[in-house]
Length: 307
Picture 1: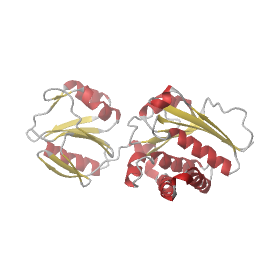
Picture 2 (picture 1 turned 30 degrees about the horizontal axis):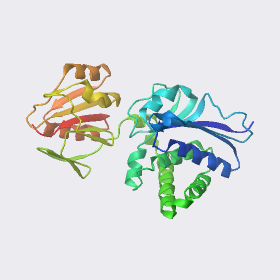
Picture 3 (picture 1 turned 30 degrees about the vertical axis):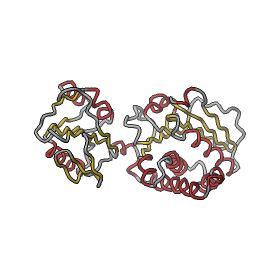
């Protein structure tokens, strides 16, 4: 019996989810495989969770409908929540870790995490996160040859010119190169962290970029202007993404004079998940954040930059 592999792609409308499926299907045809491409249209695509399924096979395919998948590419957290249960035991889930802070519940699947949005931004191709994920998928699974994916992308984007073609090819190659990194397996859910270079009153510099609003740090993601509660108290509505990141330590920088306070409800929520909560004046909190990050701890943080 020949090879048959089923893949689901899912994310918000506008993340290039259907394009990922189209590229995979076109690449399979380039390699003389039998393929089906079943996109999800309608209201979902205009703002909800868009998805499509692709089947690639050495043999004729009886139906494009697939109940369970060998592989899944999830571009956001709602996709993981909705479709994790449809991945076969032993299957592989690819996560855009910039957009998915949740830890998959299952232990019978492989997890590959890539900060695809950050990679695409660094490449100067902010809409190229989907191509990063395609490169990772094909390289990791071996279901197709990468050269056929590149040929397909050249053809698909031919009318947009060589610049667009090359940007997408580079994104694919970057995803393929990174996926062999051993740190991208399930252990990659240990959150990637950044380096705080400097803190002054009303000013924090992280990875050579200056922020002048209160910020949260979640892996390689900076969330500005995060503190929405009234008064000086941090409440649950402010920290849901920090909590869902499943970190070992959550650090709160309480301001230059320690005026920000963290509610007991928030502390209890983190502690119930086995996470330690540290509340310090922001200067000390920055030092603690860098020290624990360098030790390889899974650290997230929320910093108040003024009082």
